[in-house]
Image (cartoon, rainbow, N blue to C red; front, side, top):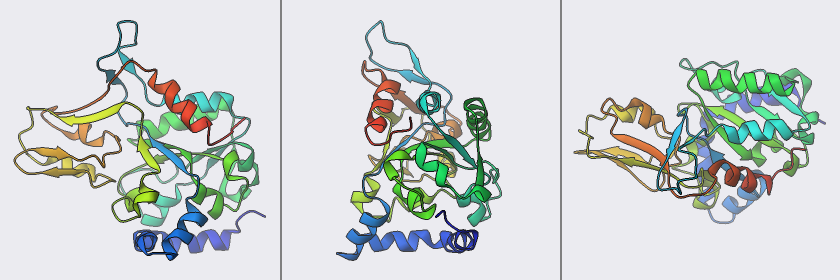
Length: 271
């Protein structure tokens, strides 16, 4: 039985306090129980918001650019079922004023057939791709992978037949809990393979990049900006820097999109 609307309303009421609940994952025994119930088996990958990411020291035959959202497009092409939510529960719950509330999550896989029909609609591959394009045009970044908490709140099974594609903003995303949640949970949300974000000598320490509201709390500014290893590679700070002093790129000679798709496919079957 899918989640009833009255329970969805309760979830929305409690969502603004999710960071308080996330702190409980650091409590011995209780935290392990929460992780098992909501996060066990998860693998989430954040895709950079930038349109094209340069490739660094690759072999000459490698492409010179990577389009990160090709990861989700490849899943769309092979998905047996696609479902778009009517609204983003995160932005709606937080009363977001900066990004569209009506651009909700895209779910793929057989488990999505069990979602309450009042919450969204099934879509074609073409409609799904258009939805994702609108999300990117609105300045949102994609978070893709197995996210057990979605299977739980939507009350659908099995979790390994549900792929989530969230289109996120840093001000409202559930994963703003990263700085306070347990390390074992936060480690399940990663950047794309091979992706690096770094500050160059062009940085003047103006602090403009702080407006990115880094989800992971990885960005700080003193005499110049500093990005810690907690960075998940969303790239929002890159786009905000007036000096062009923050770079995002892929290093190595691997096929980065194929590597990402292969890793996530091992956790979720969308066919």
